[in-house]
Image (spheres, rainbow, N blue to C red):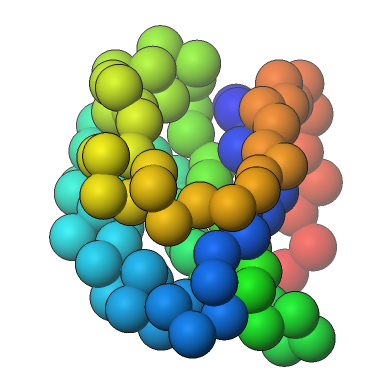
Length: 95
């Protein structure tokens, strides 16, 4: 399993519209082969932060979906980012 997690920073005034523009990306990701979960959400404490959580069954699935990344309009709105991929070897189900 591969987990992609981190955050993006955008202009606080544009965060809601940025997230709305990502609605189709989330729909496509969740329908993509190998996607176990895909979520983007506003941070509760930082008005400029968007939290990212993705779970994929393989790195190949991540790469097949991601392609070239955000479109130019979305990329222009990102002021900063910290996102990483983690290869997971074992999982303990908590609930």
